[in-house]
Length: 461
Image 1 (cartoon, one colour):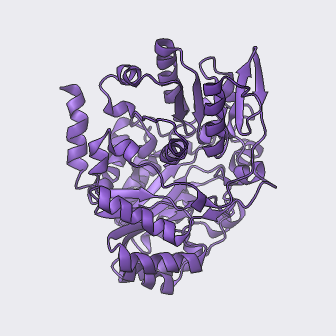
Image 2 (cartoon, one colour):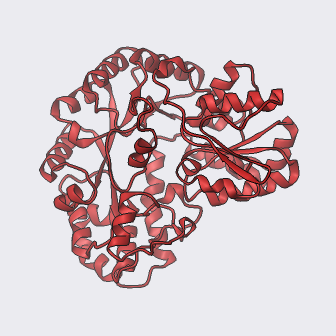
């Protein structure tokens, strides 16, 4: 979504933009050379940055064009500017920073003082401060979906379209980047901002009119925190859009009345974070102030209303015992979500949970960010990449329980067997078992799933 937002913004000011998805290109370098770009831009999240750097190295060698990296990774780990093939990085919101950089490069003027931009000049790294956050998101143009749809018909025809309406999160979960982002932008404007309901509905209508759409996924993590805004969105959606949708909720800000309104508006699935089943640990260590009783009662109420539930959970915390991991499994089992997703904790540097792990002696203070595994199958390039770097005696058992997590929630009578299996060394069979419910999860909202697979297989013809 960030790429689409940047594209629409700079296009509004006269620039041309193309996008390339490496998995969907037979010859990525050839495709890039064909459009004769003036600058190459990459967006990278942490743990995906290694793959991005390989692409950057290849494209730099072929084009020798200036390269900028933006997204979460350079925002939180700006030292990546030291990489020899990266010329610029953008930290934080990129609209105005990218526009100013493009203007300076086009005009041949000074680009060393652009806020949010770090760059190299004469062998030195120039670090600029962050600019104030964009206060009114309605001043930004609609995200440029045609950027992707024009080149990749499979994306236009994908039945489920993800949308984002909010920037920022008011919470301070210790495993997340939001606390660090809020600290970075302290004194630079309101951190949490939402587009007006009118703008949201306009975008949804545009998508329906210009693509094959059967479902929407409201992908914001904290969509329901501002209840008045959220109810207005649901009321307008029910009257003007009328498609099934998936919604992420902050469960402690939800109640039965909200679930009723979601049901009336056409919600098919609600995703929410449980993260851990030990209430004290969740409150004190993860800083998620929610009660198990509330989670269970609301989960059961969603099931009563015929709403499918997907939960997010984490395993592999420093100091976590097998018994504590089982508390997370049992909490999910009380209301039986359709899918209980589980990630292995990745203690990203500069997060509170990483500092907690270091203090507990479970993590070296000088550990490398490149040693982190991928958190889940969606971010994994192979089945062996989801692992923990936490050092404690039971961590390999916790890794195995992670692979069995969904099954242990859904079929608790098999848990004695899974617990025995968890004592075996991690292996590919367990990793493949983990993949199965993840693949199944995608099928309902992707009547284009087979089409997407077919499109991908064309690359090998």
